[in-house]
Length: 369
Image (cartoon, one colour):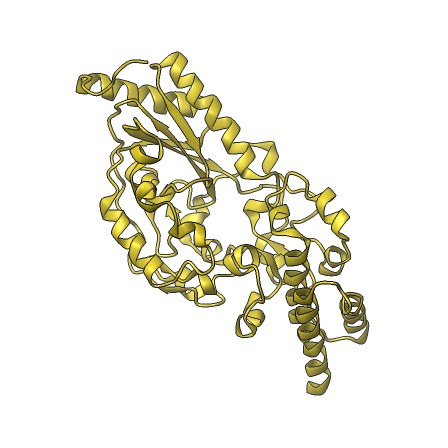
């Protein structure tokens, strides 16, 4: 391997441009180069952890300084190649229409198809190998939401966009519906110029959050976030936050759906991100009836599978309870109630608790009549 420590600036620039062009040719939605200086970003991250806003995601507090020192996570790293890949499924049921249909399950649009970890990891590895063959030999390691990597700060430094008030990466040409990935490389590369922020006085994302999890611009309390509650949180969902969850059974897109920049969002060109199992607008009672074997078989290769059948039922029970509260006809109430009653004796205390809460919602509905 060549030593890149003292290469000429012109060569660092040539390589960076060649890598960006190569990435675009290989089908990435965006490619940029970042340096590895993250001490400024680390200050805000430490404060976020100290405030407990990461909830029970203890992995986010581990690994010491490796998270903001790429050359410690991967020795020899001199630059980071940051990439984006659009995931919005163009043939999926309308997101807003599904959210307005209480008996239908809403699944965050990034999770409708194949697990993005698998898709991006393979593509990143191929990209890194092409760089070695076509640009310059290098030592590298690829990441996609899979290690202590500050993905969004690196993407900002790589000129892929700016951090929106909802804390996600925004870009004027493609909004925020894309996955991020990184290649830590031993190559010395000229960083891509950063973009300026363009949120202005807009607070649409903050105002739209069902659980008020965005507690200030650029500050998210994960403990209130529906994505955290339905995916990362292992225990009982706090009762005060159950009603705002509505029919969202895995993740939440509300802060992105209202963002004006997402009118420019691209659609997925990778077939793996197309909806599977009708999850773009499936009936809650249908999904609640899945056995653990059904869950594991049908969600093979899906990011949803990692939450396990128990949390799946917990989440759907909450959604069914919220739907039951809104049911206006006896047949609808009977269908929902019958579905829930079948899980009253479920082996999991967590499932039983949420089923009982959901059925109590039905009783409140009747009393309201």
